[in-house]
Image 1 (cartoon, rainbow over the protein chains, first blue to last red):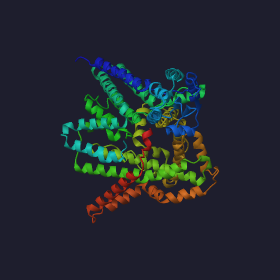
Image 2 (image 1 turned 30 degrees about the vertical axis):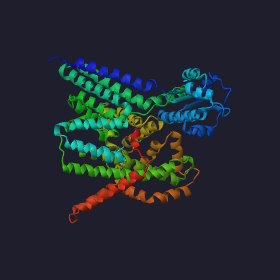
Image 3 (image 1 turned 30 degrees about the horizontal axis):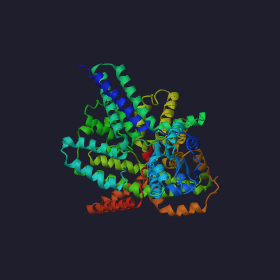
Image 4 (image 1 turned 90 degrees about the vertical axis):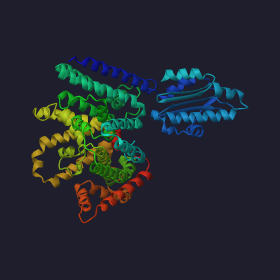
Length: 161
Length: 470
């Protein structure tokens, strides 16, 4: 009787290849980074005009996003100097990737609130929030930028991870 | 999805039982395999495709090993097929369980900032990997034929009662039952009774003990009084037993409801008169797996004292690492390795002369000390806790914290301690099986247990099983 060993060998190594593809899909684009949040924030803020923003304390993060910075490995927020501006930078380093959803929801809610605030009278700010807002989820890092230089910030963010 | 969740007890299980019941005999394995995959997908949806790949890889590997041995008479080819399959399975297990631990230590040594957090693992990865390895070894050794039926193979690996936390059933033990098993009302009744007993152990005892333990373990271990530290350790010892023992009862009971017989996983471990005996009674299926697939192949105790010592230390190091990727588990494994060596080679003759009931006391103390390493998040935490147990903590011997928690859990502690010994089950069985008492006494008793468990499940927030993390 002809041996099937060759077929079985092909079958199992095909499974290994598919398995590696599965792992790349699962973890490749979502790999966790050991980068220091402060260093990531420096890289991002150096790509953005920070003139209209100031560093927030934990209370401000809670007020604007409903997030407790203590729940995360790092949470750095720069918020507008006055209520008449919309520029903003948020960098969060998650403790666990399962926190992605919570942070992403909080950012969506904040973005919507800001849009509602400026819609109708703050044309420039509304344009910033609509066309120059970037939300980027990469593994254990989350970036939210509202700025004319949002795309540059995104590149700097990716480079820093 | 844990067995003690309402959606398992009231949705998944009745659905599974109904489908299994209405399906003709020929289709029962298919329906159980599909339900098990559904159960896996429910717990780890993003790893479902990976699970199918793992099944395919091991299915073909088993066939290849058998083909090389039987058809081609090529023992070297069979050995290659076995070793490569074992390596692939261990690499995958290592990726999910040990990658973060490895990088953490690389970072500590080389002051690097490599990513250390690994996302969640597929549910039961340690358990189903060991099941698959038992299959590959059994086929290689000729203890069982390779499984050609994909459905049967899938059922062996993913059978939902044992998928998440065992028992780790060797392939040779389950193979015959997959092909042919008896299903009937008596077995169903026996299985559901065991399931309910396990559920009660988990919901009524383990979760209640857990409240005291978690409250105490949230405090600084160096600030505990001796009584608080001992109370925490004893609560943990009992909680772990009723949690994992209860889970095992539920798993074995569920399997029985579907016609499978699994060996017991716990046999009153806290009544052991030696540590060797303790490990014959605690997590029996894991101990048996290491004995059959590691200790004996390494030569066991038949290759001289030096090799026996080496083999025991290897097995205990692996047992420690299997439980988790952190130094306290490594330490915990070696702690038992060294104590068992001392018991076997140094104190064996002395211990023989001491009556069993006396030997039980130091055995229990050593086991409780071992659990401190097991529950501690770090070695420093464990040693501070042990220091407090010796009265070296800031709380002295007894403080108001100890009195508060002791008075709060005294009743459940006494009930649990009583339940950890066979006398409780013996008395219970004798009472319920008295001839002059009609059968409904037993029915009322178990119905009452069920109601209490449902109440417990409803009011408590979700409480996972401790062994899910492994």
